[in-house]
Length: 129
Image 1: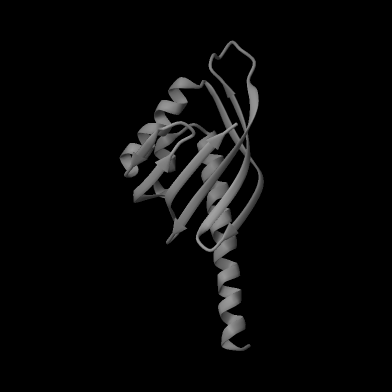
Image 2: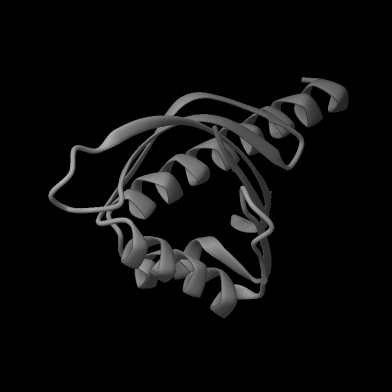
């Protein structure tokens, strides 16, 4: 196999690994356990949320997740479609949320981008519609 094809195969494998990491992250996020998210996040991770919320650093991003779980008794994320380009994984999400445990949960469409370096998320941008 020529060097060029070996490099392309390596890039393809890295993209698949990044997508699998993000799928696992979303699954753990749906479990509502912020501590279990820790290994997925780079120490210098940055989060940009739907509104103006931003967080920098693993502790701050985990705190955002804890606040999310506290404010929404129902919060579940399912990947609808996923694609990656280089280190960036783009996700179309179905997000099930409820602001009150006694209310019916509603499905929203969300979009997110994750930048993955060394098997950890270094950037997470989230948008809900």
